[in-house]
Amino acid sequence: MKKIINGLLLTGIVLILSVNISGQTNGSWFTVNEVSEKVWIINDHQIDNIYLIEGEDSALLIDTGIGVADLVSTVRRLTAKPLIVIITHGHPDHCGSNYQFEKVYIHPADSAAARSFNLPETRKNMTAGMMGDASLSPEDVYSGPAFNTQLLPLEEGQIFNLGGRFIKVMETPGHTPGEICLLDITNKLLFTGDNNNSLVWLFLEGCAPLSKYLATLEKQMERIGEFDIIFPGHGPQMSSDFILDQISCVKSILDGTCEVKDYKSFAGDSKICTYGRASVAYNPENL
Image 1 (cartoon, rainbow, N blue to C red):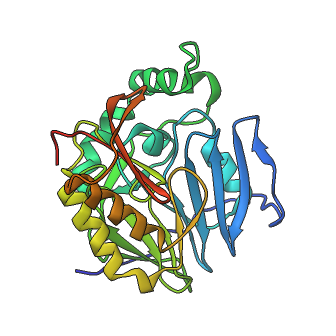
Image 2 (image 1 turned 45 degrees about the horizontal axis):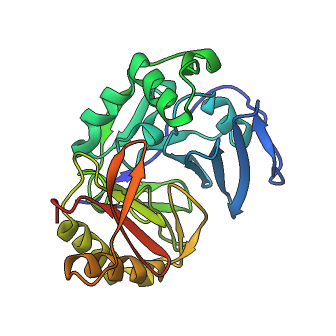
């Protein structure tokens, strides 16, 4: 089923910055750059990428980051248009500022995780772990309103009409059960959350088996003519053929030809395989 979603009218006047906003910050937290026409990357303190896309009628925010700073004010410096918020998946570095918005779209398979990570105490603990600073809390930095955010469902093929710009949902389970990517149809841009990072984590609790993730990548490969540029949840943009390296990386794990190494992170230890530009950290017991 396909749906057309339009933003609702907001009242009030908001200052819009010029397009030349490189280096614009919210305090010392966010850095903003225009990476394509009417597409901005909001760098969330080097932790993750948040994206803002503007159409003629409304704007779309992709992910809300770790949840520490005033994301709403940063967005409103860029656009005054009605805002739609979509979360690529329910991990805390992508849904952390959900509490700053009244309504957020997310795949139903990740909605429970998003709710659990958006509790104030959970946000504080997760922020401390990611930043290595136990004294840092979202409430120390953000002082605006906090909402009991309504989570709205997404599904494969759903289309958001921003006015002259159509954004289509692509279900991409693997990193989480409800991971999605968002395709800017006309401009051939794909916003991928954590599905197509240069390093993809597949060792966390709740990650799909590698074989299911491979099926997701092969599905994307079948549609590679629909997008030219990948905008990942972490790191710089990449060409669409990056997915070929990802597929080869996963296949080399599954067929035993990869030179496997140990991988350690704040989230736990695993194994890692690299092929070309792509690396996958995985659980050898979840193939």
